[in-house]
Image 1 (cartoon, rainbow, N blue to C red):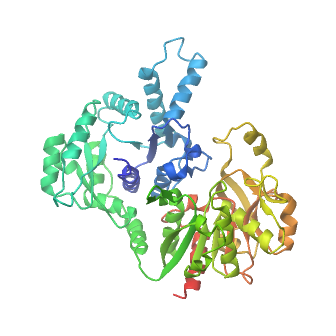
Image 2 (image 1 turned 90 degrees about the vertical axis):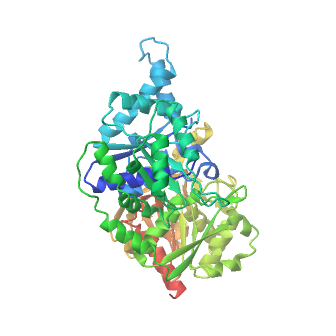
Length: 532
């Protein structure tokens, strides 16, 4: 089933192999026909993760980067849309020599080419490739067939790992292996036999069930790896090592390497689990409700960034999801007094926007630490323009193109893009440089004058209002090298303990062993407010 933990299994295995001294690259294959993840609704798909290059990808790529502790490249991501687009472009350019172009072999061979190109680009010794979706899906069959062909061509160098869920029905109280047996038979029908089974369940798998799976699924008992539910996904590599997953993989590949050194990782996991002091953080957003369920995956990188900085600052962030629509009429804001810090994350569109602006004003006037990310910075500047500078009707042209005070305007180079309806992969995307002003919260947090951060937006603070905003008390502590684009906005510390927004997405570069300095500074301010 989907969401069972393939991405975390791949991330954890990558970390283990890296810590054994191997060069490793991780590849995510998404079977959808979108060319990238940028045009998908977050409540449908979860967060869009932006690489340093600007490629918009699946959120698993974020986990890969966080576990490996390094940037990934365009070569490490693949969708059906990318593959088919390349094949069609090749056909149009007569690169197939006039042959009848078909799924087999042309699409399959393009998949293989991309897998091999990723390994070559990274210079890695081991590639760990995740095929998205589930066994039996029509849309990922070509990818599984490509993997089968790769195994046929390189039998000693290719292993298959299947991640499967073993339920423990409450009425029975016994772990059941039959669904996994059926899934393996389904995979066998593709001509693929798993070498390993990662057994996901609520608890560890016992020897009896390991033996049952081994006999029924034709795998070695020691190749059935326990993957029980854990307190934190960052426990998974440690658990895998306890079950000798790294040894089993390297032995099966005929490689020798040192035992993985996870001491620094284990220290991080230990700090992550502190329960006191607790700080309450309210995230005021809109991508939460999907039917009767809450989808926190829409802000996955923000959640993880808070965890990493919590471990660094010695606090336990307790996160509450607050629907911005609840404040749309300016009512119910007193509940925000319960929080030690408030975040308004990124997003697009009109839904809940006035609720966010009301929440930002409340945080500003009540001296609650505030951190705005992308849209959260733009709305903070709009709120200030309206309620402090008295610019009635101040807004973003994204919502009101006829606003009397267009505080946030579309970037000039984006106007033609929008007019032509070209929305995919056309925003300001990827890493850009910013220069920080001395004596500011941002400069103090980073400890340096120049930074590089990842962006994903079409709109910017309107240059026509910069002077008026600065004269009115807003500090633009981070600017593009040209001085035209405002990257960080904040209020002085003598006005507010922590009121800061970024045009970029700092959460995309936060990692377990290198927390993001702005998230850490925000939690330090929240800790002071909590008095703990």
